[in-house]
Amino acid sequence: MTATPKPDPMDVLMDTYLAELTEMSDEAVLDGKDPDSVLAAGVQLLDGARAEAGRRRLAAARQKLQAKTETPSGAQLESHISAFDARAALRQAAATNDGRYTLAARQLDEMADEDVIRAYRQLRRLESEGDPGTPGAVE
Image (cartoon, rainbow, N blue to C red; front, side):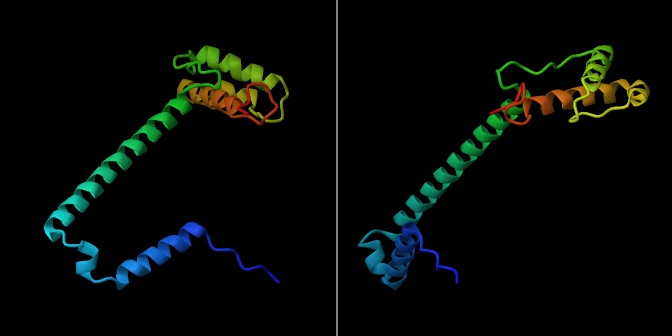
């Protein structure tokens, strides 16, 4: 037997408020105010809310993008690395015999430079997003 979930008090309040508004006459809702001015004020309020919501979404997107390009310590990820250095770093990561990373040496030598750099950046990103308790992990 499952218990019936208790309704959220805000939902009950909003439902009651909506029921009261729908039962009221237009004159009672307007309370002697001009319908056109009430409409204009409502449209202005909605436009302001839309603009604010847009600003908040943009700020959240910028923050998310900034978080992707920064390591946990706040330092920028390496944006320019040579294919040679990337191959060396990938070889070193594979040589540590860490079960989290697998890469055959012959595959590394056959990869295009762009693919090696992409794999290196992916490795760095995975290290920065690693499991809690591991070095370089985000907690």
